[in-house]
Length: 296
Ligand SMILES: Nc1nc(=O)c2c([nH]1)NC[C@@H]1CN(c3ccc(C(=O)N[C@@H](CCC(=O)O)C(=O)O)cc3)C=[N+]21
Ligand SMILES: [Mg+2]
Image (tube, rainbow, N blue to C red):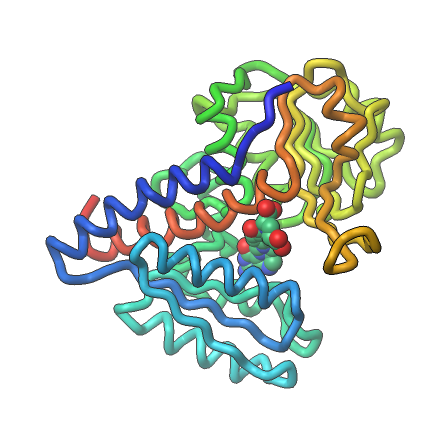
């Protein structure tokens, strides 16, 4: 079984991005800038925000983090976003989700300038993706990272059956629509399963490429997978494990030990899709900078 090493690919990709950032700095004196807004103090969110800032530094990009209190009003957040929309040194804006319940996530998504929406969540970006205008949009980072992995590992996709389990706006829907496009690492027949699907295993067992984005630890078991399938695990679930120092560990949506015995290739958790999500965020931020400065 081939382990699809997202950690390694993300390191390669970040060093490729650094070369371009260094060239831009030398030529223009400017570098791409990413601003992350975090509202409240969710510890998991803080870990991601720190990882993002660290990766920005590694690639020579500028990063700033704006921390707002959990009680922040929607209007205060929207006004901060408008300020960043107008700031020419900010090329990417990311508002960490989930947001506190007094704030409407969709209103926030709509407020971000689509040209700075490096998450690819704005309907203009998701709409362009669905219509296949990928050169003019931002592709949401997790699906984009999975595409990059399939491409770099030369996974055969054309005409094969891709089953996506999960229909979120940030993973399942963009992922399924990408796999439908006529590109090198896509061009699949696509099925989407979700919480109301009757008999999910009857679909997953038909998958040549199975993408699990359910948010439930170990949901995909060996009996649900066709021998030889390529299995992509998007899940990031922290579960209790008294045998570890921290008392918990990260597992995916796929039962790794069972499924790895019959899959032909598989992403691990951690070290699979997660690090690629961050690398693609930086790639999108660089792309935004290049568009803003007519460097493409
Ligand atoms: N507006 C917005 N955009 C996001 O992209 C976004 C978000 N909100 N909210 C939270 C989720 C989650 N997310 C992750 C990114 C990287 C890892 C990652 O690097 N994971 C490492 C391990 C990290 C660890 O050890 O905790 C891995 O899988 O190997 C995980 C999770 C981005 N998210
Ligand atoms: Mg879902």
